[in-house]
Length: 175
Image 1 (spheres, helix red, strand yellow):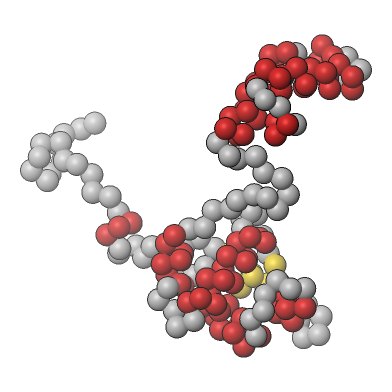
Image 2 (cartoon, rainbow, N blue to C red):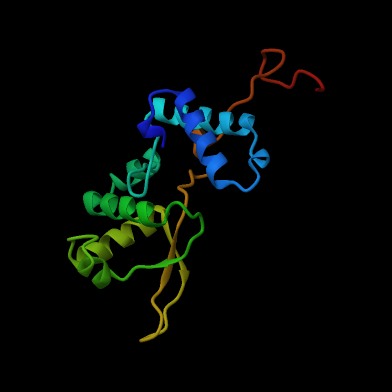
């Protein structure tokens, strides 16, 4: 409804009308709650964040893209990563099968199966995709899960230096 009104006040009025028509006891939904809902929805509209179905956004980690840019098949690997993030990234830890024949026949990708396999291996090599369960011949596909890219523990970017209390690089006393 937020897309079809001209103001937050008009949205509140419409929500009150829906409440009064559909709720058996309108008192269970106070005007203050309707106002809070309308305020949130109006802010979403003003910030261009009104989504419906496939008309939505999802985050892609730039460090993941950077890691994939070092692969020989970077474009294929990035394409597979974005596709998998779109389809499965909203559920952390979700297990899914990669049936490349089914993906091609359903129109999810035009890449050949050898290119998809190479892209999968690239995602595994950089740590963005992990095997979650092995397959059983003729019965169950191998399952995978998307993983977050982890910086090596020795990487200086993963450790922030704490400022010293006395400016000499030593502890400056108890906290």
